Length: 346
Image (tube, rainbow, N blue to C red):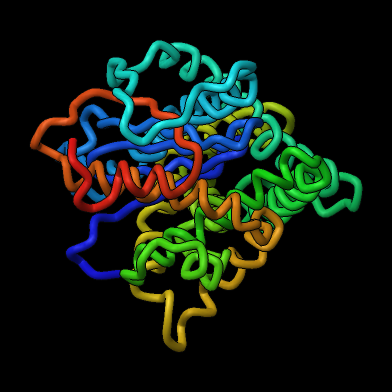
């Protein structure tokens, strides 16, 4: 990607796509009546100095992304419950709200609950399975043994794979996976400098090296390496049930460090290992992405383009007004492009 083009990342939501640019956030959703609703606005603190600090930027970016992601999910869910159609327009005055939004508190609660669920499913359960299998087979693996951490990592991948395959059997989640593919394809087209047309986006790959699914795989690998090094140093005499609980607490405490290392590693691999002879480094992540992405249809691609074009528009307006969050409804992608095109008037 050209250094002159701002970095834009994304996330699939319910019947839509969220795109995050350095200056703002845009969410585009397809309503049941076929209209496209776009919410876009600035993100407070998005240009902080911490973004230049290795490790720290990874932790803060992850927390921020989770918070914004839940807000976007709530917005997309609300749009599926709109009963009365709003007359579409690309020129009508937008609805403006504060940048933080009234649902920020609820998103923090949901984020906390989801973190507890994730810790239980992807941290506590794999460690318990590894400890149980070790005792069952008489291996007598200690919590400081590399083999114990490797076994725990294997169970993490197994649980993660099973969870994603289960989600893929739910019709609503299969559509989210399609929007996930549309998000990746649109980002590829943007990074290649191509016009954001359905044809150009459709021709792109649905597998992207900066995907959150790949990040999870990186985190699992790092948890094996970090855990096997740190645990013997911090808990040299840990054993039995007490040792397992201490190890679990240590694993949870190490999550910010592992996430920060994972962010930096994925950032490096996406920039320098996406092409060339070392691109095979990204293949394990791509294998998992094949579970969480599906080929989108053209209407889903239109929504992803709407989100991207809105995010790009926000970058052109950064620092010259347009400080309010806005929500607008459009009858088609053409209306979105007319409103948020490169030379659209404020």
